[in-house]
Image 1 (cartoon, helix red, strand yellow):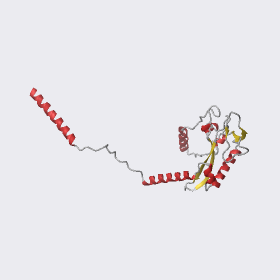
Image 2 (cartoon, rainbow, N blue to C red; image 1 turned 45 degrees about the vertical axis):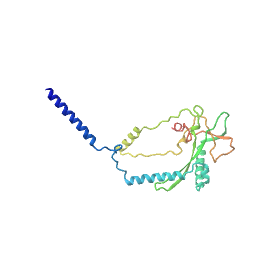
Image 3 (cartoon, rainbow, N blue to C red; image 1 turned 90 degrees about the vertical axis):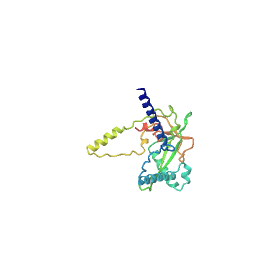
Amino acid sequence: MEGDESTTNSSSEEEFASSQDEGLNEPQQDGPRKRPQRQGKDWHDWWVATKEVEQATMAFSEEPQTMEEVLNGQDAKKWEIAMQEKYDSLLVNNTWSLVPLHKGRKPISCKWVFKIKHGVDGEVERYKARLVARGFTQTFGVNYNATFAPVVKFMSIHYILTLSTIEDMEIHQMDVKTAFLNGDLEEEIYMEQPEGFTHEGEHLVCKLHKSLCGLKQSPRAWN
């Protein structure tokens, strides 16, 4: 019996050694294993994405970033008309009134933002100027308090779309222009006069009555 056990052990050791030798003889790959290559995107999709990036880059490069670029650009007249239209709209909506700055108060700054609106064919539709308050200069407890605003749940949108599909109903979408100007401010906020539209002396500031784009409480004020 002892002789049989020794024979069995020796044969097992020989099989293990031979398996190790076979493993060493296998060709080894240099470096990490290469992952299977994924199929590239369709050529048409790649071309469309590239054109969209080019159009966005071109549009951004055409849009002035400062008032100096507006006045010195070739489309200065068009931008001046866009700013005047926006300024007149703000006055019609009683957005502010010019008052002397109260002692101990600091006005927040504002900035003109310029955008070129393109059509589906890429042609320029209109030049748009927007006056934005620099809300990051506001101070909590002084010129703003609560900032949260109600928003719609996607579940509600899904329910309405499903119901309209089942009942064969039509859905109409509505866009509210100058939406923030429909909200009245509760806080006392002073803002510097817009660049290019300084009237009745530089010592006067705008006391805001309506929520202006850029203010921290604007989304809450107009809801």
